[in-house]
Image (cartoon, rainbow, N blue to C red):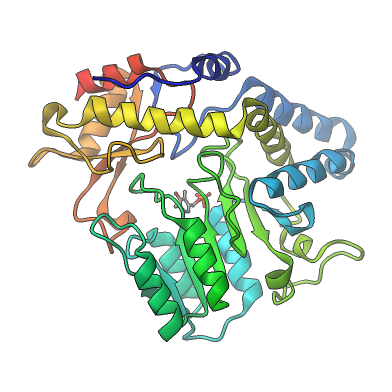
Length: 373
Ligand SMILES: *Cc1c(COP(=O)(O)O)cnc(C)c1O
């Protein structure tokens, strides 16, 4: 039995707003398809740069960019002044750690399944990752975390809200409340959750990226820092006179056209209704798991009703996931990702195939994938 998908109007509208796909795009956890409006806004800004000069065009886009900071901030419960545009989620983490200047050896609690590049970044800054307690699937264990925060508090907790290697939604709201009670800052990696699930949860810092579930351009990321923590950060260079402190963490040289495209994409997200978006994405995840579990010997890792659109599949014995991913693309035009255990070596025991449909995907797309597997 396949569950029905809610908000079919939303799927149709999302599809109509985009260029026709060349195949079946089931890879939004890597990079989504942009709307024609977002593409045109970015192209329009690039043309403005040629007509007016890059810096004059940027000044002309100032109001739009400030609106964008305000709307993006609203998605995570923060204000425009708390938002810095950067180039990627990784760049946001680097900007945060650069400004924080924590003493070498400071401990940072994160999930055992933490995204490997994040762990590498923490180590580069001399920080010591320490595992948060989790259950057998890798979900944060709240009682264990309460104990850890009481007995041996780290300098901060770094929580990846939804993994890149597993479509599991972490109980970030509960973790935020435990952290607040313990006086330990919470940094939320929302690269896979902004535009996908609710991210207004009371974290001290949130960071994310444009190109995944918000369906904005590549090469744009966001760092959100609440005022209390922002006051503890020291930027490399002071902020421009009269600007909010977080502006010092924005890269001066930037793909401004990409930021403009993101602002339009966030407008699309709000117009669609974030609650409706979340409901349809969760339903797409459920249908994906219902259709694919057991097909050709592939096994779904996530619980069937996990409220995310991301599903990962373990291969039947001996099958090469990278080759499968290539075969799906070349022979069937189906875009997916092969994720090796190096992505999250503290948790993964082998490679998985990741399926991540956005609102415009259809049951037909997922059935075609099932048939191809
Ligand atoms: C993609 C991803 C990142 C990195 O985002 P970039 O924009 O590529 O730097 C960080 N964390 C998670 C969980 C991700 O999925």
